[in-house]
Image (cartoon, rainbow, N blue to C red):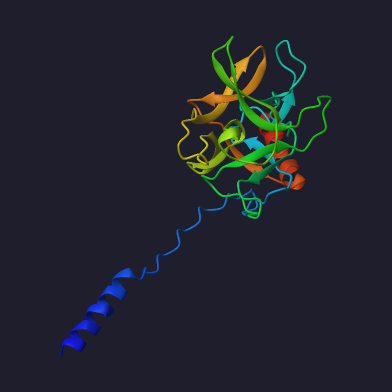
Length: 220
């Protein structure tokens, strides 16, 4: 009898120490382009405003203020201008899909006169007291030392919204906010804003030509 009791006790202890399987946390939803396809890393895309009339065009680079380089991230003034293509790179380079609420780099697919890269980064402008988005950071190595170049795409109503709020560093306290438009000296700067920039992502030139044609017709 003592032997049976001892065996039962050992069995209960073994069961208590054995970890139970935990369900894997579901991956965030993928970001979808205008075709309903998942956004892929290292693929060229356009980001365009969903706002018609006075909403501006696509995103591009510009030399603003008194500096020549690095170039700042701005929005085209003309609604029918698609801007430059850009690429997204996730925190984990092995993951080829861009998902909502996850950190990634954004880089323009363009050659410039500046020696700096076209990877986006956040920079504070003391003269205006505003956080602007410029370029010149190094792609990859997402972590504590590279918080200024980590971005997210969040769902905002039925569209996408760019957000700056890095989460790859658990104990860091970075500035966070939606990315919107701040007009200064005639440029539509991308900056931290209370009014988010609502955009859609497309990689097909045909989609853009169709959108441009519809928009031009609506303005007649």
